[in-house]
Image (tube, rainbow, N blue to C red):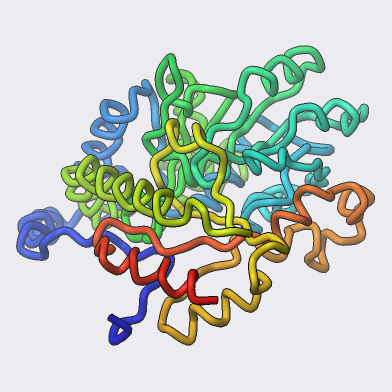
Length: 369
């Protein structure tokens, strides 16, 4: 069982023989980027699968976040979560915007809407919440605040591919939502991302921005960037999409087994029941409390000795990194729930090819603490 290293996430790879015809078409067309046929086909297929009208593909989600902020002409201050991957806040710095961190809800680990209003200043122009681990934010409460203060909302939905609420895709909320198609995500193009656009006009602007700001062969209207997805990545995405429902079902089965086996282990808690019902099972985070025989870091090291490689995701907090810790909103006293989660969280392995007997082995190692 321990002969092979077990990581938190691993890319789901379709059969190579199925990808060869795609490569041959790309090779024959000599169309490698700039909105080729596979790029267009993937945009259309994703709109259909996700239940959205407009989507703009990107080379990665970080560039997509940077471009989303540019597209809405965001400046000043943006309220966001310290409990995320650094790309969330880095996209703000790249646009000359000051992040303002607010604490998270200790149950969902998403931004706590009750903390947002107190963080709003005359310089606040937007809110950038994160659907952490693919579990939806309180989108209604956030939108109410945004409407009351005339703020834009850009969701970092990197983890939220295929997540729905009662009325459809969670990606329809806010002004824009940004997805990641990194190799470790539920749906991937090896490397890639996308912006969900509310209308055709916004998509046109975003498509211009991701192509250096060009609107014609000789006309540039904005200081855009090179964010185009290649035909290779687009073709891989089309192939991955064939298997996405199968992959999510496999993840769901792993999630259910973890919940069953971990139930009753003192000091180990999962996100509350109900969180998984509106999830794509992107990650399996647990929280390690003082009632468990080992600290979170001790458990982390113990698992690694057994070739199980969990991840302290997210640790450290974004607000602890040197480029952010000097901000008033980054002070530890302002973020007790986020700090507690960062010190206790451990993401266990979950990916479609993870054998259920391996899940049982992982839990046995945790029981033998």
